[in-house]
Length: 114
Length: 113
Image (tube, rainbow over all chains, first blue to last red; front, top):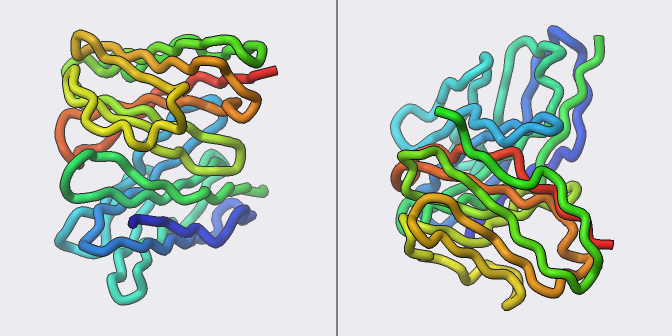
């Protein structure tokens, strides 16, 4: 069965600092991996996804993530955080066959301080 | 592209009442998903349609929950005899084909008193 662990419930960073949000997954085959962002009152927005190929994927808003099969990880990074990045971030794993339903982690809330 | 639309945005109901939520997916999207999100948790998959066919419903939380997509366009999610534990955000998403990205609506926030 698929599962996703986001070990950090809440992270606070200073504006301009670098950011890394952790995500570990459990899945019996090659997973499809996603990062979504959710701002208050907004729907979930896809930041980036990994299906295959290059293990370093680039997303929107300057985010990137690296798939490490040996560590079952898909950590999200950004070199310089902006105040507008404050939001809830969700990592998700999807199956390659059947329904396209995603299994989400519990999320990491990012606070950005001036 | 007007995005995924959900109605209502908020619903307050008394325990034991039935509620129905509506989702209008992006027009050319044939796949539609319902998720539930409770406070402090990530979205939890409930059910999935491809066109009008409900292809996976094993994750619906109980037989009080049902979903329809009669013409392969909009969908409704009904909860009968609501309980306080049903209080959550109900999210709808749509996509064009397998493993394309999901576009989420803003959700319907249900509060059961």
